[in-house]
Image 1 (cartoon, helix red, strand yellow):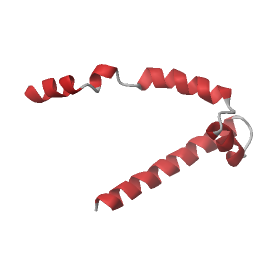
Image 2 (spheres, helix red, strand yellow; image 1 turned 135 degrees about the horizontal axis):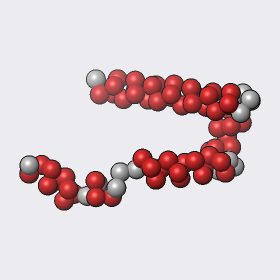
Image 3 (cartoon, helix red, strand yellow; image 1 turned 30 degrees about the vertical axis):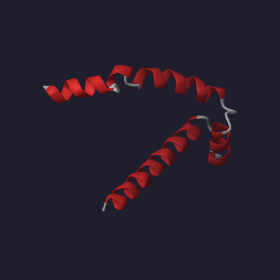
Length: 77
């Protein structure tokens, strides 16, 4: 059952990725998804890297959210 759930989550993530790439390519007035994904995977897209760093900083949890002591403090409440 867990395997089915994980497989379905993977499929959903793949669909979301495909939609995002299609939106990016349409906005750039292109539609070569394979070329775009290859550029991203090989680090040839500086624009992607800059955006990634910007949003990673914005949406990453602070380190204390991952610490064991904060998990213990939450559990103690």
